[in-house]
Length: 618
Image (cartoon, rainbow, N blue to C red):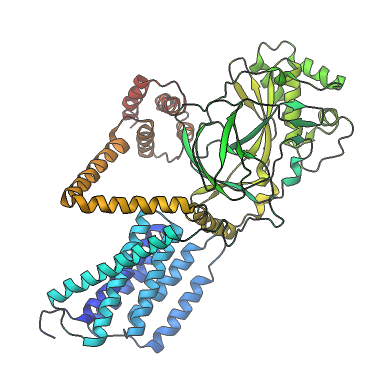
């Protein structure tokens, strides 16, 4: 080989090193494990040895690799999957770098490195991970093309013109493969369901709710860990609204006829929900919903009813995706009607007397609500319900003094109505399980819950007198189930419900875009670059410099961290500063953020002042 020329072998080794570095970079990003720096150092050493033609004998390396891999894999558990896998993979990879580099060995290193990149994407399916995957794929294509030439020509010097040709061939192959993959994705039909579902119960559709609530009924689903919806978005108040119930016959609540109402024009938090099909033709939403922006996955129609609930038809038979805006700080303001005062005939005199006693002297609805909440503090929660008898409310209030959410909500609503306060039951779900593997929340059927809304003269207030409890089904949710559900959710989000009509629309749109791009040529390219740069500039302005509540929260978090306070929510920051000199300033900033972010009444002057105040928290 000519002096100063790079040969095929050195180029192949360098490409292998790049592939390994991409794997290390990704695994370091998702695990943050400093141990990975050791195999990274060994890999560099192996690369330098290989350039000089040196290698350690396989007879010595094999037992080291086997022992190390077994050691790390034995640390695998349902609580910790990623780090032991990353350690085992990178350790085998680094040991492999110390050995000889025949074609078989090089392909093994390429495969191990590619597995590391794939593991990164599986653990963190973010844009940066997919960029890493694209880089690794292109590098692998280039390696395989160069390996083909090396097999024919041996370790010949690489000419500059040949390098350009190799890059061109690789780019063509990579682009063709990528295009074919997207075409298959667009053109192939989608099944209606996934191949597996770790939370799916046998026996068909299951719903934790029905269109009525009977005393003692919801307790039957406490052990059902079937998923009802998956939530992408901030979960500050995990109440999920499904339907409202107004009519009570003494044992069962039923929905009253409702009118359609317009959606609310307010800007709230944006949630993306993947809703599993149930036997109920209502859509679960965060409490309280403003509007549904998009519904995907099936040809469905929906409409909003009084009380902020959504009905859908026909009954969904496959998962649907919903984009909805909502706010946990907004109280509904639909006016009460006569059904919100309705009471059954033959109420127990003891129940009536209790209601009168609690309401005696109460100046308004809010004061009465406080008294009712205080009354139920001595009660306890149980799913092991004793026989209710002919009057379940009387038995609950005066004999057992324990029950589940239906009893607490029913008794609360009846006491409020007996004192002339309009009340209704809201049936839905309460709670959520964070799935760290996919950065979303699971809501299970076992979280089925009912609570009360009481009208204070201006708006409906949530009144939940049920003591805190954890459904037994939560104890059976394992890390492995969460990992499998993250894969299932990726399937739902990207494959299921991707209809043929939507496929054709995307394909035709892409075709039209290419034809326009070809017609305008360089001008279109220049305009595209200009638009990208403009978009980046606007993004920088909107995400860092504009006076928005989001940027205010970022600056508050930064100021808090300088004071040694690390918290994720505004209320946690405020709690951490309690008793400190900066507390009143932090409180002003937090309240300004919450009012501007979630309230329909916004004061720009207050927000501007909050930006000035946050600068003084140093």
